[in-house]
Length: 86
Image 1 (cartoon, rainbow, N blue to C red):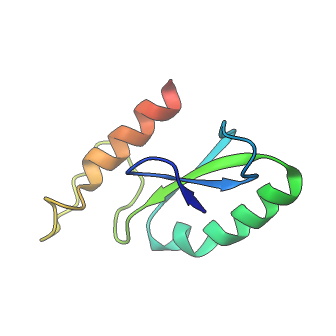
Image 2: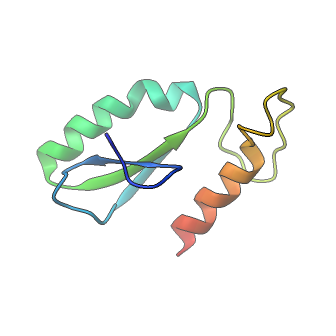
Image 3: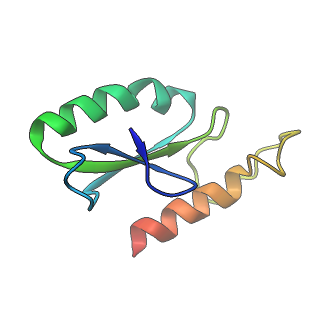
């Protein structure tokens, strides 16, 4: 995985800079990121990955976290949606 921006990483084929899929979620998604990275690399495709432990990937959900100023799940979910919509 290679950080591409301050909020997500590129996974898969390093030469392919345009992600064709996006993995995002909480710690469960993070556990699978290396597998997606390896398979995508073998297939010659790239994808994006982002996530925060304890942040479920649902729009409109406000998680109650003590570290909300750093790990704002609502804002991350909105940002991913806007990125994919583009």
